[in-house]
Image (cartoon, rainbow, N blue to C red):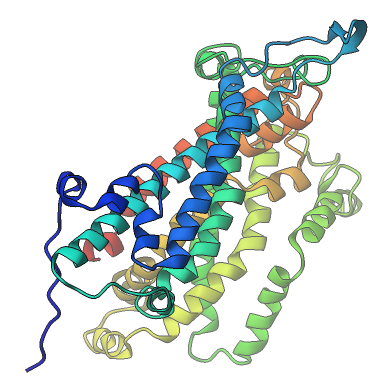
Length: 451
């Protein structure tokens, strides 16, 4: 019989401190000493070097970065200051850099705490091996383990570092903006900004922005629901039509519809915009045929523009749903369908009882993802209507009748107001709405219940 390797009993840190040797005790304060004592040269030097670099950085830079984080800079406005006995015009403190360096300092401290915990675990492991008379792994054996049983750690290091630097840090930086007064009147070099707490959230939910936020939120949810449902339903119908018996040249039909999806979306949307404007080709054609006496307000009336957006999105999104549905339909159990036909079930009954439930079961996670994507569908709105037509009430805060939360966020951050703090608040609220709807929807799916 194969013998299983017994895991040595763990020891508490109190036991390690009280019964460990001098190098073990020193390792509680100076990382890497115990590893060096046990000839784990690479690991020991890495721990010591990391701690030394951290202490130097913390003394000469970290303390200052964290200290300024509370005020985001004492000098909020530019003015004259005494520099070397000479009055010179000094700019305001750059609150953006102070905030960025402060967040970076906090992340470095958190990483250092994690590295210290890793060091303590290594020290405890070495103590247990000594206590039980086990062999201490050498540096080469540690390196070998990174390519064998701990290969997942090696593979994940670079992606995790990239996520931390290019995803986590920017997200935290953006979220902290929501608690400041960073706007057009608080920009460097003229002015700095400061913390204001939850004032911005109050302005959006109950203050002057509320009469814009909630109508835009309702339209965003209606748009996401309609855009997702229409592309899915008609994509499934199109796939079933092409896969029906008697339909010839199926590959040709698929290619025709996929060609719509293959064309870059911004090109299609800009062409459709020119096609639907009051002086566009469609209105000119309708008037020449005497079907209408005046141009139809496809993009200039709020209701017309919203319906137009949903229809155009169907034209762009249906081919994607068709491709996915086609793959599912081709793998459906044909014995169930044939048995249903023998029992007298019609085409609609087979679709409602067999085909559609199985397609929905497979595509539900993708539909949730598509719903969240439609909440943040910037391209269709911005390139087709630009958020318009204008609305007297919504326009006071740079929103239009077809603006989604994401396009409104773009307008107030990149427009004349440049309210970066309010844009950060809206970004957080978009994340909350997306997370809540996706979690609630996914937990109610059969894929989740049966998984």
